[in-house]
Image (cartoon, rainbow, N blue to C red):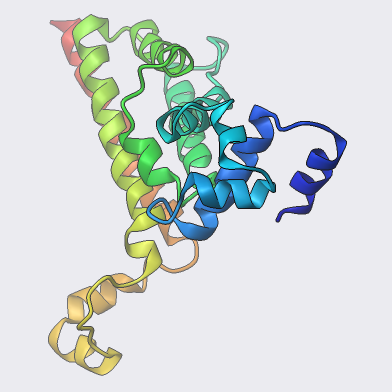
Length: 219
């Protein structure tokens, strides 16, 4: 058990914050598929019913974990240029997701309908509207940005960043002989490679967004 959780338990009763801390700990250790309220209770040193007093179900607990992560995001104010504000928000969501990589696949596909999530979504869509994109283009580009983030985060937390999924793999010699383009591409995805790729795609995405906005406004 994490020492900080032990200390908190020693000082008083179970709290929502303690349960959430321990839930992230168990998920990162066991994965989403290996998580259970029983394992969580074991980490906390309590009965499962004590957790249900705070969270009626696992779905309620997961919702709280999402709300906690989303609430930690910073939506920049209008003192910055639009492009910098959108870039910061996308980096913020990527950062938040990668803080708990085992939970990230749940976070990025979660349908965000709780008040904290809706407040975040409202703020991000508002950034597009404030940037002069208009209601429809703001909505569509918000979704486009979401698609890009979802793919990047899933890849970095549950995809290629974790190595091969196939049972049948090939060694470097066969890779070089039969799949040379794949092997050559792999040299760019080492340390720092994901960051460079993310920035390249983000710049392309923002360039096209601004082009669409300027074209629409000119017409």
